[in-house]
Length: 427
Image 1 (tube, one colour):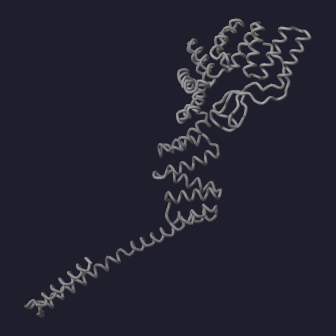
Image 2 (cartoon, rainbow, N blue to C red):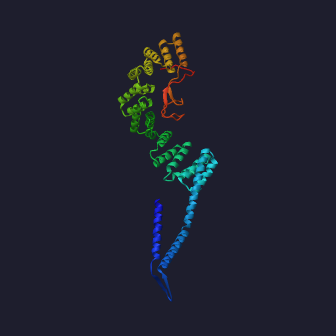
Image 3 (spheres, rainbow, N blue to C red):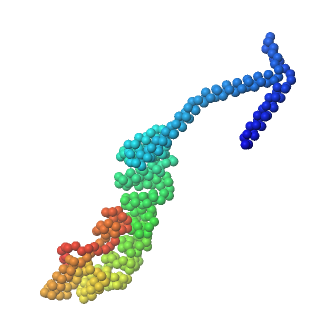
């Protein structure tokens, strides 16, 4: 309604102005040499208006002709954009349908029509990946990585391909570049941690990991690999504080403390670890400073008091007592270890040695030894490091399972017994 009123007002104003011009009196005279022209004022006004209209039309026509190439270019660009967007949609559909040939064709068409945009380069890389054309995929990803606005997309694709090829050094470099291109990406932290583990860069993996259990294992591995004594001590302490029950962490910490002359503190760490999780390696390290059998047995008693009811404590006391010639004390602790639930080959082997030492080369002694060795064949295997995820056995502790690649999954435990030859240990 408002527009209608405005149009009526303009028309009315125009008619009034034209009417006023027609009512103007007088004549306009003009002389051109020998010629003269007398025209009424209304006619002269209309003539000027006509001249103005023709000049305006001529100027607009010239401008239209001058801008014709630009208009044609814009029209062509709009057409290309429309065709390119259609090709992009078709490429996406082909990728979703698993049509490798169609995806490559439409992605190439979109790239030709729209140019090397981030979207077309990503389409080309995915189409090439689907078709198995690694050269096309890599070329598109490199072009993406070279762009400031889409570098992260290209680097992520290159990182995925490097990891698939197990090119861990290249992958680690790409991960660092991707982190710089897009800081704080949550998934990238996990990828970088995994790459650091693969490369054995334990300190880097530690800095990228948040969970306590993996951090303890990674800190232990970092401490064991660190050549600098001060840094190794710091890492070992960090690992032990994260998990006092992790035997390798306690061993690494106590070993570094001993290297710095802090023997009292090292022994305290070993006793504390024994309280959490008794382990034969802890006892071996604690008793290293004592050579004579009887003082070793006394030192073992002090260590075992930290967790005296544990079967491992009784086995330690039995082992050191036997080595010191205290066969009665050794038998008592072997019985106590058995009552505490230990039924392993090493226990029955030690019992066989005790029987031989106490009864000598007698019929009763030989019978008791045969019985103990027979029981050993049916007992559990001695404990060792096993991956709790895949069950793979390892001769030594590792931060990462060599079979399945899981981190912090190795546990010290026995397995089902297997038949085999058992020989008595000498003590």
